[in-house]
Length: 346
Ligand code: FES
Ligand SMILES: [Fe+2]
Image 1 (tube, rainbow, N blue to C red):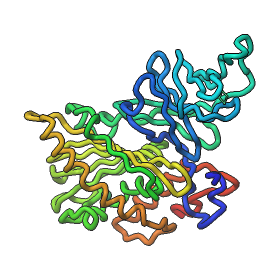
Image 2: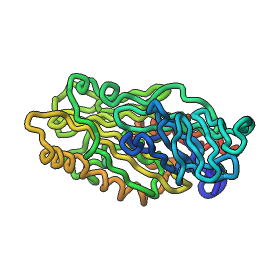
Image 3: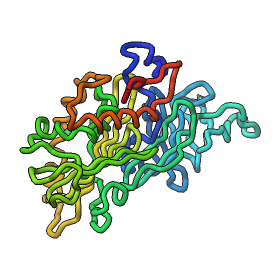
Image 4: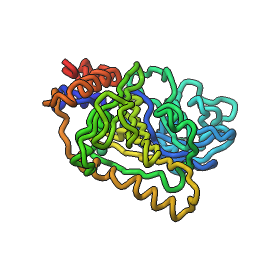
């Protein structure tokens, strides 16, 4: 099924499955030097490999000779991925550089699509834009860009315990970023004792941020009213939600939600635990189990949720929610003449 055709079916106000932005496709540890791996995202077959300098390259997966899949049985030679079918070489620019049985004349006309890749702190991102526009910026730095208190702290790497993948969920990434505008669900889905309150909120062209306070002593929109636990959430596009806990725990969590096909996404949960005295593998495993215990409760809701537009909103949640939907619209290019989220914020 074509992703681009999807807005024609069903509710025309639903977000379509081709949002623009950076999206997570795995972790650095998934792509060892010398390996060639198939991937499938945004309805596209892809191939991933590291070139001779170790830079991760992601290209369209089907060879432009006769369509063999480079990700199944392909190998790396120098900077190129070599097709398992007839041995054609493709370089990081998607160009054919060598045909073994016609060495003097590579094919100059055909080209593989090159997907921009960004690798940071053990996380692998690709840039997707259905209209072919280039990325204007990089994904955020989770250690410095989400909450100021984390800058002075030290964190463990996310590997090996803090990398959890949920495959093939019936889940749209829009529902995950809307978590940042939804403090009330923490009471019901996560069992906190008091209704959390918004403390801060801002947005710019690329980001949507909120900070939420937990406990009865926080006052709405007063970030200095208490020093208890807070959760800061920085959405960077539709596919990336960076969260920083502060207070009793200073854990950092990235939720990456990436469309695979219409109706299906993979979700990546990346957790960075603060370095504390006495940490050993056993302690870290226990702390990691605590840090990751709640997400399945969200997933149980999200995978069965219907997208309501416009939603019915109570006054404590209304403004932030409408602003988030309005901000979200920029990440959905108009495809087939259909602008998704057309009524958002109206
Ligand atoms: S299909 Fe790839 S070399 Fe022939
Ligand atoms: Fe939640």
